[in-house]
Length: 316
Image (cartoon, rainbow, N blue to C red; front, side, top):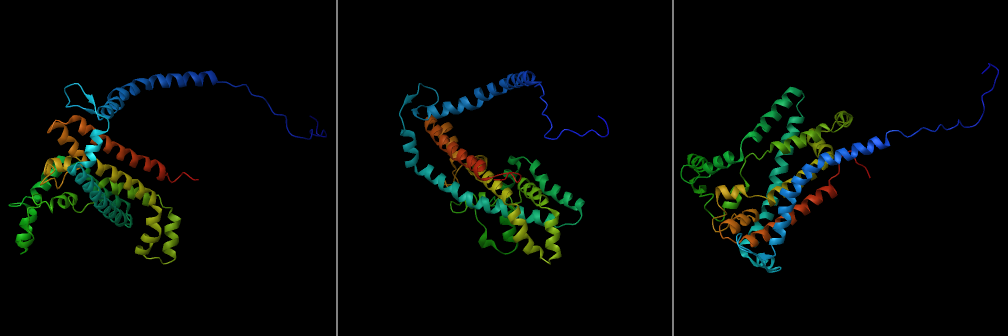
């Protein structure tokens, strides 16, 4: 094109490109699905099929050995009328309330204290100290707390006697009025390492510009925590709330190891009641009905997670 020649006006012509790789992408997708099939087969065989079988057998009269006979909703009706199961459900809701309080508040306070440290190495050190507890097996922790609550030589009663408060010493796990509260209040100072990490991640997600603006405006640490930090970690709070509720519904090990559901069913939980009715009383189908109820509650809480908890990068 010469120097004086004018370029043609109007939009540039659209070039057509040939589509390459469509067949290759399709073949890659097929290969991916084929590679996932073994895992899906294992899940179907050992996860979903047993769950479906349990739901089916919950509508029968079956002791785990003989041929099941269909009884319809009889097991579910019996569960609703069973005072032990009703008491276990009440215990679950009580534990949920206490579990939310001691599972969220201490972890958030400690996360705030660590976040307020100016030295990043000190922050990492204190986080590590609180997270180390996650490596201790749960059975070891339960045996330790069983010794603390021991009425004769236990640490708690020994401390109360040593400071002149012998009147407050009790058989903490043997008293029907104190056993459930004793189980719920284990783990002093109630700082969960996992919850602490979640809150720490949420606090570090807050834009530094927001914190700097609050500092320049003379906002106190307490006021900043209430007006800025707490609202900005709301998604972490929602996630932990759902996880705590689900974990409480599935509690079995704690009462099984320390109280076996006693005394007088004061610490009976639905998950433990499933175990007792199945392997102690031999009422397998009835235990499956209770287990199905626990499954429905757990699934409902899980669906709440997907419905209300959204990632911070997701916008409407």
